[in-house]
Image (cartoon, rainbow, N blue to C red):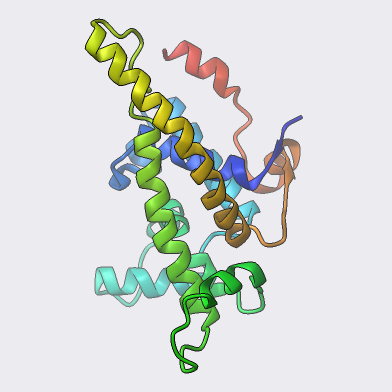
Length: 216
């Protein structure tokens, strides 16, 4: 039985984002006719719950009250998408007691004055938010050649070879960035057996590999 890690969560999020780039479609109703994408969406929501990355009710209500101009909103609106808040870093603001010593040390290297005091919630959030945006842009670059099944023509083959070589170097940088993101996302270093995810967090039981083959 597979054990799910922070790396799985992050990379599956990037995979889903690549398959469904429009965040307005990150909900059950938009994905209901595409089973592979719907199952991936449900898996991510289960993983976000397990890794304690979903928003509090207070966070949800504050956000949707502002957006809707209403005092109360439907529960379906509050829970339909936890992926965007995760990528944004909203979970950081609810972790009042969590410490990030290595990340704090990295951030404080940029101090210019004594008055530049470290603010855990603000500085960790902005650090994560900017780094995640950069990481998502890199993911696009890394996937630049992914749609190429066969390169015809010498010029095209040469370009594929050069970009693939550059991407191999970029992977080394990505690993360093990912380690910092992992540390912020999962400071407790949690992991979950798949059967635990199924029983306690509603992780889909379907065989996704088989479903992907059927919908190829």
